[in-house]
Image (cartoon, rainbow, N blue to C red; front, side, top):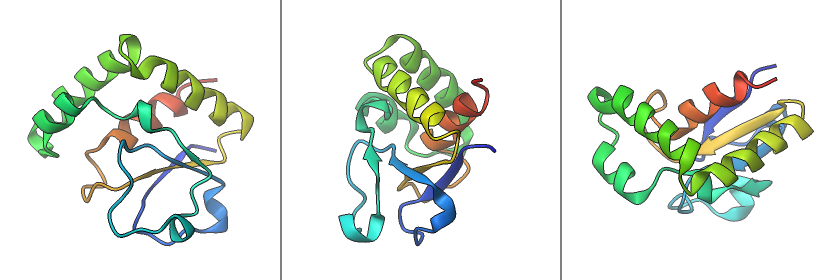
Length: 120
């Protein structure tokens, strides 16, 4: 079963499994009750500098992905990524990464899903 991703503005569903918010800031206009987040791994999000540089520009996504993976490998986010990997194992990949970005194809949750789907 692959890890799922879902926008914070979509209604939670029982099939989501364990819901992990992977944004640094709480999604605007979403109450904690409505979000039904089981865990908030905010430190795994891209650095503010990288996030601002990217600006959710689809033309920059490949470069963003490379820079973000570099941050995850050696930056402050590494420990948080390891915690996320552990959660994924504990829940046997019955896990949904929740994010707020409007662009569902070009965001950090897509990158994290790819990493988590390739772990054993």
